[in-house]
Length: 569
Image 1: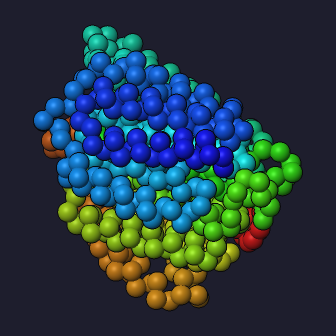
Image 2: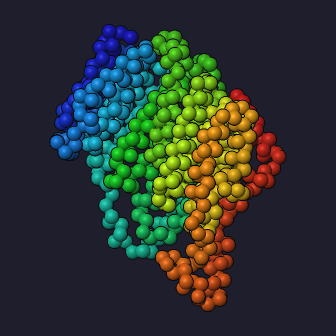
Image 3: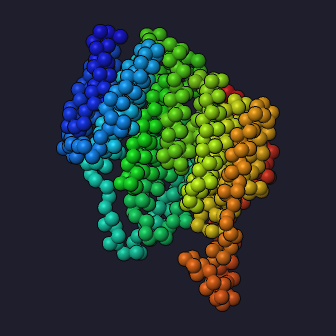
C-alpha cells in the first residue's frame, strides 16, 4: 500500500470516530462526503480506479438530502452517549488490527454498523450504511474481486435513502373501488404462476432445481390465498411479487454476487411496505446485508478471470495472487461475516431464513468451510433453536408459525454443522418438508393451517417429523451430546405447535368472526358445501406432497439427493 493510500484510509477511519461524536446531520453528511473522497483517493492510489465512483456517488446523494430532518436534536441522542460509542468503536478498531491490509476496511465497516445501532435518527442511519459501504469498497481495493462488488455495495443505503426522499406510499389506494383492487390480487396470482412456471422450465443446477420450484410454489399458494383480499394495498401486492421473484432468482443463479443482490431486493420488498413502523428493523437488515457482502468478498466467489477462479468458482486457488497482500489468516473472517449477515437477515425477515440456508449449503464444499465453520454453524443453530423455543412460550398466536419456522431452520443448520453427508442430506429433506408445510399454513384453510402448524412443530406424522428423525439419526451417529439442546427445545416447541381447539368449524364459509353456530345451524346443503370446500382446498396439496416426500420418497430421488449432498461439488 502506498503512503497516499495509507493516509486516505486513515482519514476515512478517523471520520468514523467523528461521526460517532457529531449530533448534527448536516455535519455528518459533510463528514461522509470527506470520507467518500478519501476512499476514492485510496482506490486510485491502489490502482483500482474503477472502484472510486461508487463512494463519491453515494456521498453526493446523501449530501443532497441533508436538509431532510437536518438537526438530530436532544430528542434523539446517541444510545449510550457519544463517549460510549467512541470507546466501543476504539475497541473494535483495535481488535481489527490483526487483519493486516483489511484492518482499516473492517474497522470502518464495523464502525458503520455501530453508528447505525446507536443513532435512532433516520438520515443518520442512512449515513451509517453509507459508511459501511465505504468500508466494503476499501476492502475491495485489496481483494481480487469484480468491480461490480463495489456497485453492489452502492445499493445498500439506496432503498432507505429513496424512502426518505420520496416518502412512504400514502393510502390513496383506498379510494379505489373494491373490484379493481381485487383485480390486482388476480394479477399477482398470474405473475406468481409465471414465476413458478419459469422455475420448472429454466435450466438450473441440481440444488436450485430442488428449491427454486419449491419457493415458487409457496409464493403461488400465498398469492392464491390472498387473491381476493381487497384490503391489501396495490403496493403490497407488487412487493409480494418482487419478493417472490428475488427469492427464486437468488436460489436459481450460480453467480453469488447476483444472489446477494436478489436477497437485498427481497429484503427491500419485504420491508418497504411497512417501513414507517419497521424502520429500525430495516436498518438492522441492511447492516446484515453489508456484513454478508463483506464475507462474500472474502470468499473469493466474486472473483473475475479464469486465472483467479476455477470453473466451479470453488477451490484452494480462489484467494488470488500475492500482489493483493492477502494472507490465509484474513480468509478466516469470510464465513463468520457471511453467517452473521445471514443470521441478521433471517431475524429481520423470517421468510428469507430457508432461502439463506440453501445459499449457505452452497458454501459447505467451498474453501471457506472448515471445522471451525462447522462449529460456528452449530453454535448459531443451538442459540437460535433455544431462543425460538423460549419465545414460543411467551408469544402471541400470530407469531407462532414464524417462530416454528425459524426453529426448524435452526435444526437444519444444526444438521449442516455436523459436516457429514448424512447431516446435509437430512438438512435438505428438512428444508423441503419445511417449505411445503409452511406453504400449507398460508393457504387460508383453518383446518389445514392447524395441521400444518402442528407439523411445523414436529408433531407426528405431519410436516417435518420424518426429517427430524433423519436429523436425530445423523446427530446420534456422530455427536450424541448435541441431542440435548435439540431435545430440550422440542419439549417446548411441540406443545406450543398444537392448536387450542380443533378448528373444523372455522373451515366452513360463514364461520368466521363468531358465526360458527350460524354455519352449523344452516341448511344441510350449506353445511355440505362448507365441508366440501374445506376438504377440497388447495391447502391439502402441499401437505400431501410433504407426506409423500417424508414417507414415500422414491429410491431414485433419495439416491440423487444423497449424491447431491455427498461431497465436493
